[in-house]
Image (cartoon, rainbow, N blue to C red; front, side):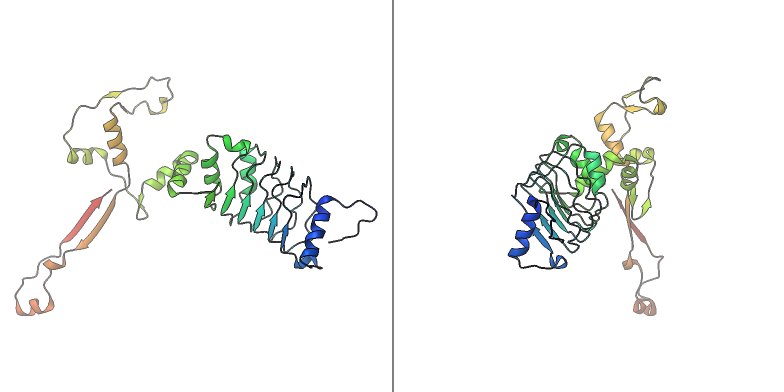
Length: 276
């Protein structure tokens, strides 16, 4: 870091960094792996590209509005930017190794642009975005979970498998349907008529036909189930089927039984168990 100001006034962030280096008795920029700059009243920060081995950076509880000072800090793994006045997170895209990112209590508004900026962070596990205007969106959490699959802890809450499935269903319904229909790596399709006939007695179904000009026009040849029980049953029948097979070894004589003729040889019986 060039500490010569050539007559220019020293900025607040530069002075804060100088103080930190003195405390830790660091003389070379390459030796700086962490900077603790929180609660300094900073409105801007000088370019930190000289600290190329910086891994931990605390800038929380300041007055920052933008992030344009992390241009070559590729080793950064933890970044704390919460409790600022940030409205745009452009500048974070290059931080591929980031694992922890705190951005809560800011003024970030654009959900789509913000998530897009974080998409390349394949190691990002902990993320906070709450108390930002964009977090008020009804689809905020599912949208973030869908586009940032590496995140395990979002806004201090663990991301559950059910939330991942729901996010996939909302933003990629076609893929979700295919995933649901797969069992043991093979898609299984069973006619509903055969299963229905073997499960319960048939009864007249309450059906209604959609008007030709309605939103169901592309499915006009399909009957809409009017009974909730029927609808649930059809949904259940569309789920993937799993089948286990095993040989009934009791029906096969042992070597000694074959030799003594105690038990006649019979064809091997294959037992099958089918369930949903």
